Image (cartoon, rainbow, N blue to C red; front, side, top):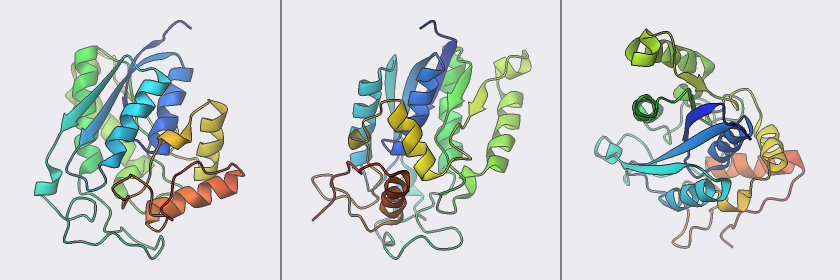
Length: 227
């Protein structure tokens, strides 16, 4: 397939970002994956991100080191805050990491400028999400406007597009699309509290959304859960 240009893809190791990567490849982009070791407690996702990027065939996979755990304020980066297991509730949960997507997209934007890439793909989702403010279409539209103003390509009239192909899809629809594209979801992880063997807990918000998504899609869940 002839490429339509370069794309930077944020790959976390979860099923959403894996699906976004597969969709970017299906569109014909030469994909450059970027992942972040940002001080998260669930570092199993970094190994999963490497496996996903390798299996789908990216040009390059960059792992960047951050220290967002120095800020704290989230159950994903602060050991003093418990990861909730009571189910997805209303409002913004304690698993929200302040400014995470803004920081991630900014670094992806910088790499996209260096690569002279046409697009950045991010697997955010506004339907089956846990109340994160930086997963909303309004946020993405605002970030696109900022990127247009802040980059050389934007000033020259060749803006780097922020692509969020999953934003209006349910988890079941995402899983069906990824299965159609041949993703091995057994390589991915969504769990906020995996054990030392990287088996998913099955109880955190992310696991609950994943379990419900596979059930609604009518597709067997290949995830390795703790017994």
